[in-house]
Image (cartoon, rainbow, N blue to C red):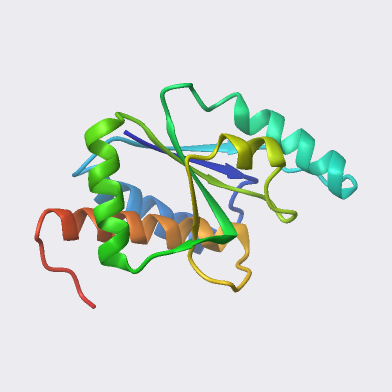
Length: 150
C-alpha cells in the first residue's frame, strides 16, 4: 500500500480531476491513499511543529517513509521505479510526505527512511501532489514492463 500525506488540500477543480485520474490508474497496481492534514499560517517554527504533529499521527512504525525534500536524493524514473520495487519487498506500506509552504518539521525529517528530491526547484505543494502521483504511476508501468509515453 502507498500513502501520500500532504499538507493542505487542493482547491483547483482541474488539479482535483487530474489527481483523481492518476489515483484511478495507480489503483490497478496497488492500494493508494491520500491523507490531507491542515496547513497552518503561523510563524515558521510554530507552523512546522503543528503540521509535523499532524503528519506523525498518520505514520506507523511499520511504514517506510519517503520525504520529499529539496536536499534529498535525485533519481531518474528508472531508478525511482527500482527503489519502489525493492522497498515493496521489505515493507508493506510506503508513505510519501509532502510538506507545506515552509517544508517539513525536523521530527518528520528524522522519521524519514529516504529523502527524495524531484528537483532543486520549488513547486507549489498542490501541483507537486500531481507530479508525485504521475511518477508513482510511471513507476508501476516500468516495474510491470508496460509501455508508457515518454
